[in-house]
Image 1 (cartoon, one colour):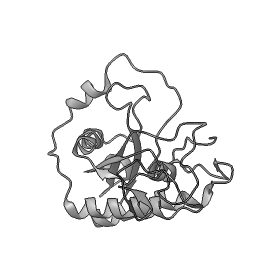
Image 2 (tube, one colour):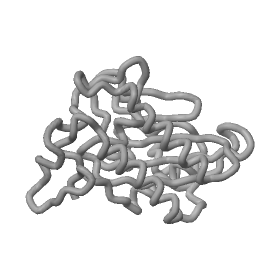
Image 3 (tube, rainbow, N blue to C red):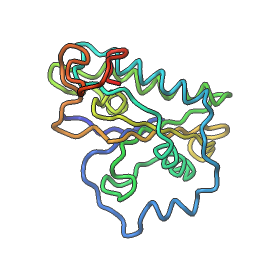
Image 4 (cartoon, rainbow, N blue to C red):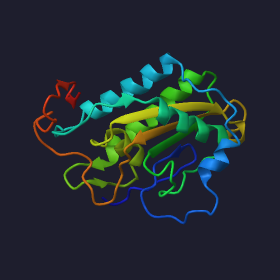
Length: 212
């Protein structure tokens, strides 16, 4: 796949090309900043899962191998560590802790936290208009936030929130979502086209066109 790396003022998508790794482990560095408690409110989790389920079930042509996402507390813990940094960038692709995960970032400054979550998720999802399934290509504009949401082999997600006024001024809400295993690999198919759920593993069922 081409054109799979993007960054903008409010959104950050998972990097899938090689980068230089710093000598100091980012994970060890983040532990110094891990002062906030974990545990995203269920209201926010439900919203996150609803948007992702919609994205993963609404592709056309249908996906034969789309896994249903499960919310994961370890992914959430890592997302919270990253959000606590209040820095709008990604870890190196080969970081020993964050490397296996994809990552979507977003920040905005509405009055309410829940509004900022909707803004971020909608912004990621609306990149759908740039994705061309016929040639597996992001046309006109990068769409890696969307492709991270719908990567068929990804099975776990965890997200976190922090207020980070340094990013966008007063009342800036920063969201981080971690995806496991990560997707957005150049050259790999996002999903296999076919009858919905036709390539689920033995014993799995089909729910909302996803393997569960």
